Image 1 (tube, rainbow, N blue to C red):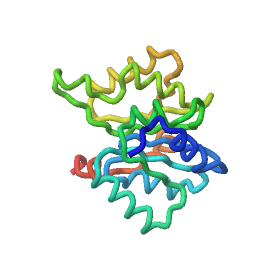
Image 2 (spheres, rainbow, N blue to C red; image 1 turned 60 degrees about the vertical axis):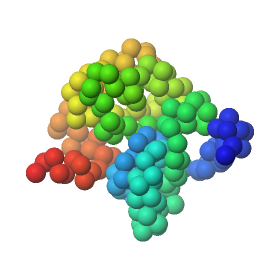
Image 3 (cartoon, rainbow, N blue to C red; image 1 turned 30 degrees about the vertical axis):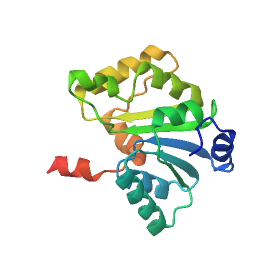
Image 4 (cartoon, rainbow, N blue to C red; image 1 turned 90 degrees about the vertical axis):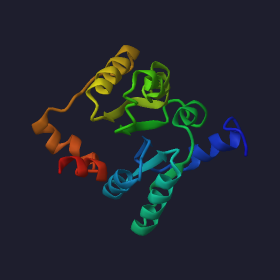
Length: 184
């Protein structure tokens, strides 16, 4: 396998969607249901999903084929390495990080996706005015992530209040199987 540093990878990523209105990176798409639903709702945008879990990649590939989506690309690799080596500065209009593993045990928290290093990479790849959308059901992780993101200095917090969220923010956040099962 070629190294991620190979220029061919960078050129291929840059050529994926040159005409899309927006280029959105979804980190850790799980089984892909949210990614597919959002991509179907917004065909004018191009979505690059990054996931390490093979069954999730297969599930999203099946959804993309079933729905005939032409605006979804998939990279099966570590998201931090993808950010470091495959995405050009300012190339993305948005990044979605929906319900990443919170690694609740103290000794595992260093594995959390949103560290100061990865947030710096996100700031580098987001275009001016780009949005980082983060959602978690772990209060501890939410506080830590918000602190880490805001400490970077490249981000401003524009939290949606509930009434406004139902009109705007929720439009781009589909329900997941995990989320629906927790409601029961």
